Amino acid sequence: MLKLEGISTQYGGVPMLRKVSMEIEKGELVCLLGSNGAGKSTTMKSILRLIPLVEGTIFFEGQSLLGWKTHQVVGAGISVVPEGRRLFPKMTVLENLKVGAFSEINEQEITNRLDAIFQLFPRLKERLQQLAGTLSGGEQGMVAIGRGMMGKPKILLLDEPSLGLSPILVEEFIKTIRKINEEGTTILLIEQNAKKALSIASKGYVLQKGEIVVKGNRSQLFQSDVIQKAYLRG
Image (cartoon, rainbow, N blue to C red):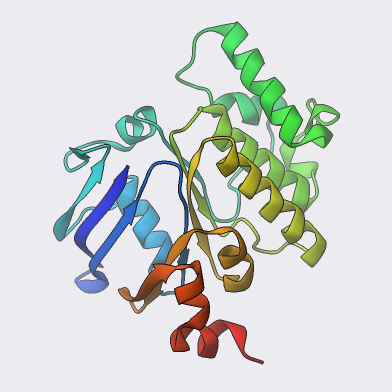
């Protein structure tokens, strides 16, 4: 479904990604692991065509995304839950959710999608008219994921969804992400919490200083010396 083929990027002449290659098949839940500054968010921005490539190509369902604009990428079925949630704080929960369905004009379809979000996050139904900026961190995370799902994406990019959440909430979000995947949405989960990400991913990649240093299925990654040393020991 999504293929990155040797992509490289730079900021102000400084290399950020170096020949990164990844493949995500339809229906998979794939994690991209790495510490701060490793290039995880840069990878996501490259997929969304927010930053230019120095070399390499990105394919979505067999079609090159080179030359595409961000709104075309989103319209094709790639949705994102950005790091830090990035809600509109002075808009209500309902208004934030509806932003995710900006390209849908059928009101009944929008209502159906909202109902599906309430199945995932029942608490949001009680908060619909509340300003997003007044919600707790966990509730804001629910709105962010809900907004991403309102576009009925073929693939959902989740950028650090557990950031800043309590361990109990992280556990809840991991279960929700697994459920979204089991119901048919392909997911790329970008995370620092390797243990949690690997508990639900079918395969993964590890970025260090802009390069993929380890890749493999879940069991291979758990056994990797790089993963053990950087994330799982101590």
